[in-house]
Every structure is written in C-alpha cells, then in structure tokens.
Length: 229
Image (cartoon, rainbow, N blue to C red; front, side, top):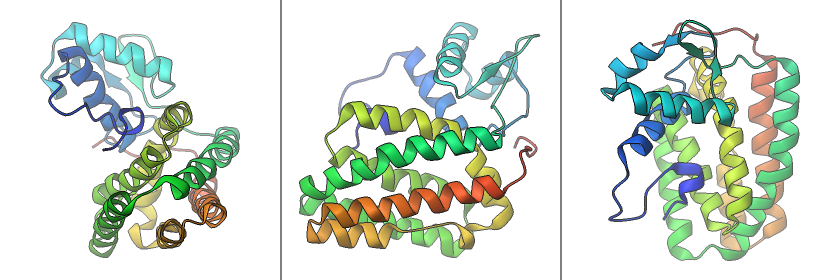
C-alpha cells in the first residue's frame, strides 16, 4: 500500500474527517497543476470548486501555505508560487539528497508484489505518454515515485520528499503542457531493472538521473505561469 506521506491515501477502512478530505482535494489540485503557478484563486472560488464549507477550505489553505504549496495574498486570494531559478536549484539539491536514497532503500526491500505494482504503474504511465495525456502522465509519474518511496520504509524521508513534490509539481504541469509528454524524462525502466536485481547502487543512480532530467526541464522553462484551467 502507498504511504500516506506522499500519496495521501488513507488506511483501508479508515474514513477521513471532512477537513482532511478538503485538504487532500486541494493538495492534489496543486500537486497535479490544476491550480496554475501564478494564477490567483479566491477562497470563495475554492469553496465553489470543492463544494466544501468556508471553514475547512480556510484550514486547508492554511496548511498548504505552511507546506509552501500556496502563497497567501490580500483580498482573500491565494496562488501557487512561480518557481524562479534559485528555487529550481534548491529543489534539485534537496531531491538529489533524498530520492536516490529512497530508491536505494526500496531496492533492498521490494518484494515481488511491490515490484509488480511498480511495473503496472509504469505501464499506465507509458500509456499516458503514448496518448499525449498530460494529466495522466502527471498522476502516473507521481504514482510510480509514491509506490517506490513507500517500499523504502523510510517515513521521515518520504514525508520530506512529499513536501518537495508539492513545490515543483505545478510547474511540471506547465512544462509538460508545452513540451508534450513525449519529451518528459522517464528512467523508470532502469529503476525497475535495478529493483529486480536487488541492486541498490544502480537504483540510486537511475533515480538521480531521473530527478536531474526532470529538474533540467524546469530550469529551461521561463518562470511564468499558464492560465488556470
């Protein structure tokens, strides 16, 4: 099962409180670029979009601001921050410090069922790439990483990685929308082969290349936004 730190999936049979459901809904809208970087959104607009009450929406916004996923402005407006060159550089440094280590740990712990789930997620990602499905690409790419990091059994590292994904995920939607899914990096086959061999070193190296390739696309993109869907 995917760990809630990165995916937000509740434990089986455990209903979520309303405020937590709203938080996860808004978090996914940020993570997958439904709220575009730089585009202002009103609290009332988010209330209408989610169908939730003002109080849980305000609480969700407060948490997402604390996560660094949203920036609060006057007049009850919030927005997803636009990444500058310095932000991309810091995110690259942090991701390279964390995610290869998670991949190494996963290579040492993954069982046959875990590897099969990863392969299925990667196959779904390949389908999204072939269709030019931007939304599907983003969700399955994130899903692959989420499943992989859950296999690492390192909840502290996984939780930190989740926070980083919230910061760069929206900009990946912009880049993917402009460049197309066919140009997006995908080192997942290398990672899967390393896991099959139980080779932690190879898994970490492949993950480092995957992270570096993706962040290089962000670094090349202009620091602007797209219209919010």
